[in-house]
Image (tube, rainbow, N blue to C red; front, top):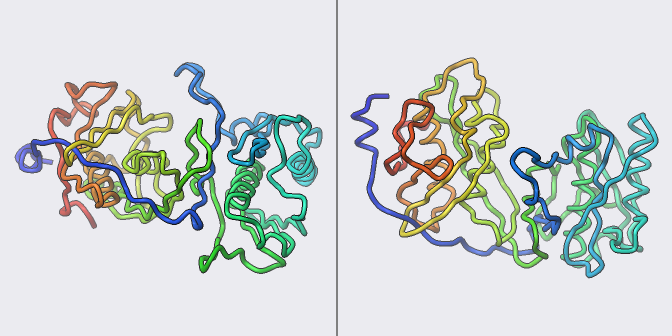
Length: 333
């Protein structure tokens, strides 16, 4: 993209302010007070899926106070899918250590589990509908995160006496690993339901396409950071291109005086494999448009990017980062 056009987009200025609280009733965020930050970059912790692929499953339980999730490792003896599922559910119901308790209350029973092509449907007895908000939230988060570790399983759906689970007037459909955004070191406080507008490079490499995503997350989490982390997970829409390689980290996000500053790890400078080469500037504007469009309450007018704390670098050897990027509607298909 011509340098003149890039210069016309550049702004001068600085950053914004926090987001709005939304009803706890519809929130699905579960907080996990497990310390994950002790690992060095060289010893990054395995994801749940990576751990289960090695034969070690993470069973999610409630803490004794019933305010947050904790996890314990479990190694099934079975080798076939049904055997592992049976063992995992037994371990979920009956923890073997006194410092945790099952997230499944005593009056709630699992009527059945039905495994589909890439998901599991879990049917509960009618008593499920009598659960208070926090208990229901803990149960849903714990069981979804536990069962998503099963091989080939990408979604979990809850039903009650064979009817779709309803929370208020909202039908809770299939839940995925992206449904629950879990910060560490906190209990259940307040929640937000974010309707995110994300952008990913299109097949031509010079434009972006919109992808809407609903995420339930803790009020502890910066919404701008949520947007970026969701984009780093990659697009769900066929034909769109990832913005970064796996392993790229968001080191810091700050908002001040209407501008957002994003600091990435060095991996952001590596281009993900794609059939069509993506213009590096398009990637930066994908992030910029997503942050501004998803966080209107913060009145952000521009975004500045850093890599390992420095803006004195060229993004993927082409784009000078020492500028502030404004929203570009011309790139949107």
